[in-house]
Image 1: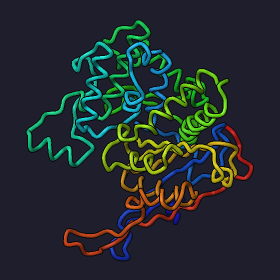
Image 2: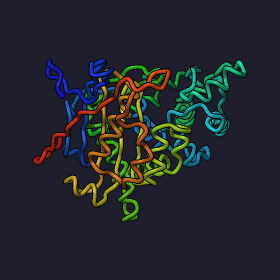
Image 3: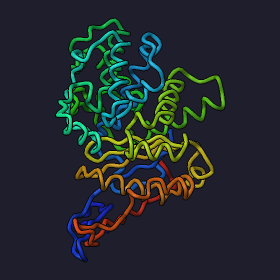
Image 4: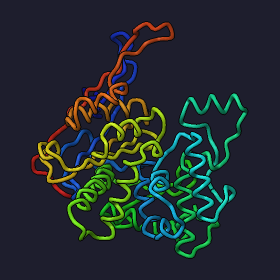
Length: 362
């Protein structure tokens, strides 16, 4: 379905047979080297990936040597890349990371907020619990930033400011991994108070494709670059500890658990999602040489619609097995029921990918 103004409609909510909402989306599917394989809408849309950019930001911290210096393990790295549900295991790990980094919750420059988990929220309400900074879904990223600042000999004060030496490094690293000049990445301030990048959507797909390709290369050869080793480390941390990237019942966690290391996925606030898929017969059938990256942006920021679009996309690309795709089936196109359990409508996906036989690397 195409909007009358030419906007690509990826999903539509029907109440009865009447259209209630239409959702515009953009999709890029690329090889790790940036060759465009498939698209929907505008694959080069300038996009704020929000938390889907966390692995690229964590890469800068990883390359400071902070993990080795402060004894961070792969679970800690996964939390740095995650948008956690503020479950006890998440808060406890963030607190442990702060202790390792010789920092305290008072050093964090993020604020507390309601949790992403309904179950956790109910528990907090029952206990009249007031969340602090360590309860932020981004507290792992912030704890990593504090460690990164210490690792380069910079002050932990103002670590969240764009001109802090660590954030200067983060900006350069993000540009490098996106294969963009530094000035082509734009920066704003995220909800958690850290700088957050904006760049073309296909560059987000490229970053995640690089992570998957790096893991493939590490398993094939010991002669890999430091950057490839770091990207592979990020991939392994997230896929080994998917419960720390999101949480109980969350899409990212269920997806990575089901695919058992074959792909990595990360949501970003306001309708962004990124996936890196390791090389397989399926990626070869899609016309790829090696691993692929996928990036999605839903224009109106609706996260429920985003998950539905990503679920349909995975099915269209025939990634994984039917059994693996079943793990996220509940997020797919589905009926809408009211408070009495009456079927009153449906969420339908209408995206059709365009294949780019000539590719083209930007």
